[in-house]
Image (cartoon, rainbow, N blue to C red):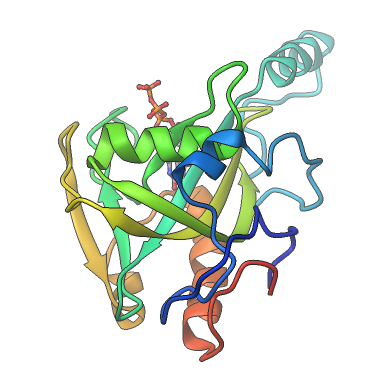
Length: 200
Ligand SMILES: Nc1nc2c([nH]c(=O)n2[C@H]2C[C@H](O)[C@@H](COP(=O)(O)OP(=O)(O)OP(=O)(O)O)O2)c(=O)[nH]1
């Protein structure tokens, strides 16, 4: 399933992702920014209640929600790179797709490229959209793309741990709760022999 139009197209193809990828400069241009959400979240907003105060608090929190972008980086054998978090305490030890928050004025894809540079010390090529999920904090949303490494060997710059997981190993780690439906979607895409082309 690819619920979003592809992030962008360039010439070229590779055996893992297929063609139609956005590389660094194109990613920085941010072809996918500003799209509306079309998919319900996987995680219910936490902390809501039925009191007027509760509604106001939730509404206020939603208005300052954040967009988190992350990447399912694949190697040539379709293993995916997972990262183990060290913070906050509630998430420490759980696994996620590398990524982070989009800064104000920054495009989604530029943020994705920046986060991979900062957290993994790699340059990436961004492929097709995997999916999105609402996070526990009201107004926060996670959006994930497939991608591959163009340059560098990933290392956990900010601590934690990295693991390349085969599709058979996806359940060997404890994913963050919001990631679970995305991991399921990814499993389906990885088991499908079709190339993970942008726009498929
Ligand atoms: N990167 C990433 N974050 C995720 C995933 N799933 C999930 O619930 N999250 C949550 C955890 C955090 O609350 C939030 C991302 O925040 P972050 O702390 O990683 O962002 P950041 O790198 O910009 O961090 P910072 O500079 O503000 O310290 O999204 C995921 O797969 N990848």
